[in-house]
Image (tube, rainbow, N blue to C red):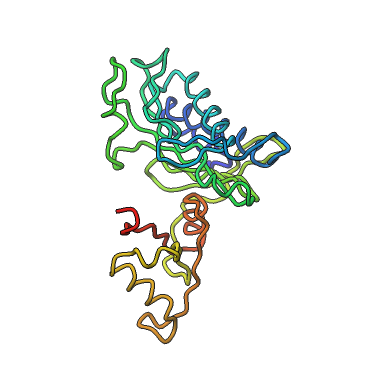
Length: 262
């Protein structure tokens, strides 16, 4: 039977993993509701504080972080979690030694765009707790990406969409605000092979390494250039929004190393 919603889709996954993904989905539905209300839900702007990356924190950043962390703390399958909003991982008070999984997340990617009403999102990854029977340490959260059990993001845009993979394909679920359900709207997603779009912050061009400058120059040269076609340049400054566009229409998102912040 072909799954029609997130609950059906999770029915073929290990119960503990399914429970964590369901917990994240419920948290993201709360964040989506608050994000959609904007300032009707209260002030959402700058708090005057910074996160672990030195980025300014908004009130919606903190609300999203509290939603997810609070839900994970109550999930018996989660031994600990790490959020971009904090310098150190959080260890579950009740399930540190018995929880099967660790969760890492950015509660609100692209939050600098909130005041412009541009799409923002939540990014998450689920890892096995490698040393069950003990509280998770830093090494558990620093496992290589190939050891991820599941990963995904939720984009809060005109529609709220969760894009998710457990390692055997990518599926998208759209939140139906009428019934609170996540309904399967795309399955077996693959990046289109051809597109006329690329995304990069061109204001930093003078700081790029030479190969990056050459590549972008070739794209900008259009039909008369070595790539013999015209391209459109995009830049949203939100990883979730950029990746979602690429999964939908193809292309590339570049955030290259440069001499401005080597």
